Amino acid sequence: MKAAIEQFRDLIIQIATPYSTGTGFLLPRDGLIVTNYHIVQDNRDAVVLGERLPKQLSRIVYADPKYDLAFLEAPVSAEAFQPELVADADVSEGDVVVSIGHPFGLKFSVTQGVVSNTKREVEGVRHLQHDAALNPGNSGGPLINKEGQIVGVNTLGIEQGDNIGFALPAIYLKQSLADFQAAEGEVKVRCESCNNVISEQELDNKAYCKHCGAKVYLPSEAEVYEPAGVAESIEELLKSLGQDVRLSRRGPQNWEIVEGSARITITYHEDTGLIMGDAYLCALPSTNIKPIYEFLLRQNFETEGLSFSIKDQDIVLSLLIFDRYLNLDTGIKLFQHLFERADYYDNILVEEYGALWREEEA
Image 1 (tube, helix red, strand yellow):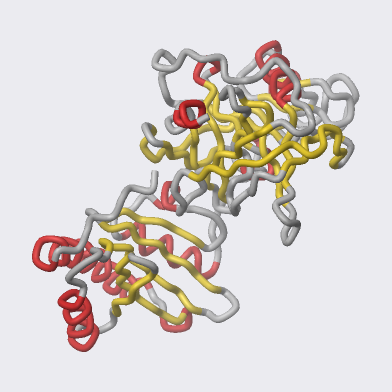
Image 2 (cartoon, helix red, strand yellow):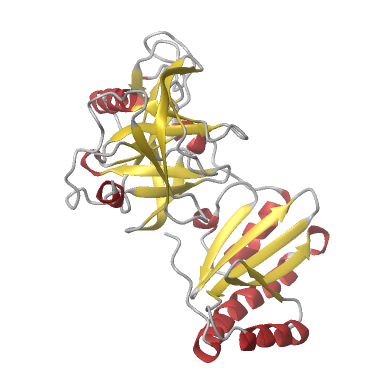
């Protein structure tokens, strides 16, 4: 089982849009990234990041609201991967399965369970019910068997449901791949009314299925996201600091920046009006911690506008601003100060105080 899981480390993809975050997985032979439709809905592209895939935008080329599937272009060569990943055989109740995910902000995560029901109907579509825990953001990741074959695509878990999760059976994924490849054109959609897969070239008036006349929504026709209010101000200042805001978006009112060796998350809490910039620096060592705490306490006393804290083993440098005090000039100065100090303190803490470099999350 360990070897089966390990082959997916390079294939699991983190996915983020301005509206949502989740997981996907690479099918190298098909040149596609598979995820849930609800993760990328209402977007033309999404930010993708993997073990061997630098953070970049990937175009959404297939939308399937019926089966909650979406395909993105895979900007990775398929030559390095050879195994046939999607299982042909169906699964049975009692089979051991593993759920694999890698949502933004979390490391590669694996949970094991068993299939408890193979014919659980969810919104008119058969699903596998299993008890392999689905962590937040794991939607869109693969459910695999002990041979390392994908038997399903995780779609959702039930909150407070004692590890009750659902996965779309692999048979629907294989059928969707075949339908996608058979249809002409580049960007395609499955019509929920007649179940046909059609391309943008086959639509009537760019919006209606040529087979049944039902309204369909192509990814290429999605409205381009435009931030508003405080989110717009935050993105303006990030642009002024030379950041690519499209690549920094990771769900509603959240952004992520990498500055030197520090990872910085920016979150706007609309209910309280608080904007938080948290720079995740190095990690505490297991010994000789006292000098680090003493240094952090001194810096909290001496450093204006920024504060240190410890989250688990991570050392975090934070900036807090209330939205009513935010303007472009002051925001640029404050966040530039955070970015510069984050990289500076990271090096000081490791080189002079024995802190540990953080492991990469990807």
